[in-house]
Amino acid sequence: MKKKMTLIFVLFALLAVGAALWQAWQAATLEKKLSEIDRRAQAQRLIELSLPRVQAELGRLLELERAKLGQEPPIGQAYYAVDGGERADFNCGFFMLEPAGEVQVPPGEEGFGQLLRQAPLLTNTIRRKAYNPSAPLYDPQEKTRFDPRTQMPVFGVYEVRDYDLEHPIRRTGKPGPFFAWHYKDNLVYMRSIPTTHGAVAEGFIIDAAKLATHLLPLVEPGLESASIGFAEAREVPNLSPLPLMLRPGSKVSLPDTAARREALRGPVISAWLISILSIIIVFALLAFYARLERRRSDFVSAVTHELRTPLTSFQLYTDMLRSGVLAPDKVREYHDTLHRESLRLGHLVENVLAFAKLSRGKVRGRQDKGACAQLLAPLLEKTAEHLKKAGCGVSINIDPRASLLSLRTDLLSVEQILMNLADNAIKYTDAERPAISIHALQTHRTLSIRFSDNGSGIDADDKKKLFRPFTRTAKSDRQQKPGIGLGLALARDLARSIGGNLALERSDARGTTFLLTLPLGE
Image 1 (spheres, one colour):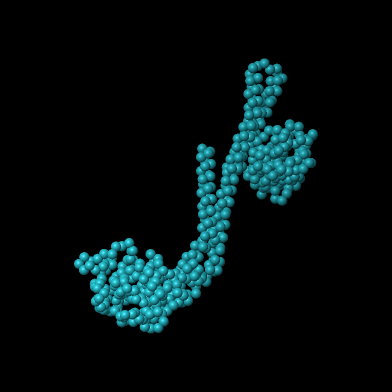
Image 2 (spheres, rainbow, N blue to C red; image 1 turned 45 degrees about the horizontal axis):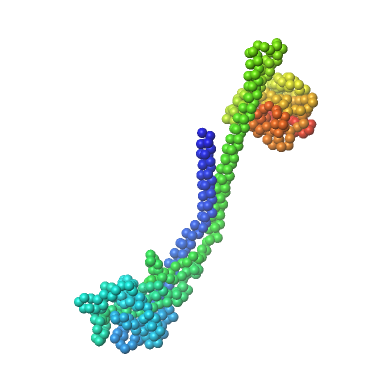
């Protein structure tokens, strides 16, 4: 049962410490979490403010490049010409891709045309999307299929109507709207033109990085690390008609950061303090529990040791008395020894029971009221008689001013306190002629009783633990004095239970003095 309770207590302590550490970690990361929430909200707000300007500039730049292509593309001509002046720096080059796969570029752009011809995946995808803007990317491993009726090549599901190059190619309708798509770093902006031989693709390829340099200056200044790039698979582009995303980046200016940090400082510090205090309380409880277990073990050990000696004496002497072989003078001696040991056991049991009651908060609750001299004189005389029997010299002095005072207290508790002090003096006073002085006098609103001996005093290390229950001094261990280390602890607790106190007033080579204070009556 004891091990089970210990495990439960330790488990509870670990849970409490874990909860306190979790609370401390939450407090430590609270500001970071709130900052991240504010950063996201601020980034979204600045993006919404920036998008109209960026979108308008993007539309203007694309319109300038679209205007150079015009509405009457040169289909079927010997060379592909584009009007409208020099292309923009983000425009890698204009192109026209015929259904049969022939790439045409404006004069002077032969290098760009050569690059397109060396990128079959790109050109074949351009040809597919000319038939259907949502067509998938061209797969080089896909086998070319032919229509069994016309024997024309089929690009996926998009057929070429007339593959005979000897027939002139003519436009059969107006050019379609521009649309954009990208593969890797190639951003294609194109339109489809219906012809007699199938769909012709016309447009230009955009350098997204250079285009971003025209757009980023229009972004709100608070987006310090904003970027423009291709939309990921699950992202919806916010820069139409291109598949581009304006992203806020990680650095977002928060103008109220200092104010928020100041506002959070108090709650965060409070959370830390509460967590630290909780941990301290848990460890204090563990220490208290360990101390309680140690005191319990010390109590069992001390009481067992103190009971073993008189019980051994009882067994030995009773066996000898029962045998009937003792001389009459020895019988008397044995009876006196048994009586003395029984008194010692009774005193031990009374002390233990009284301490147990005080530990549970129970006090006698009786009140004896009367003149100091009338109440104290019998108690002091009884204490003096007990000391004299032990061979101690005793002097009792009651201050005449104290004799006029009225005392209201529990005489049984006072008697037990004085008897415990007397027992300590008998055991530990190591003078050749032990002398005890008991002096009652009036102090401020109290009656004080000084109990002094002429021994060698108490060691400095023992003074700190003098009133601890079940704690014996080094001197008592050296001299092998009987006792369980409960007398002074019980005496002080009794004094406090009746409204007074017991303290060590002095202890040196001249002797030791204890001061007992009692409350006066009305």
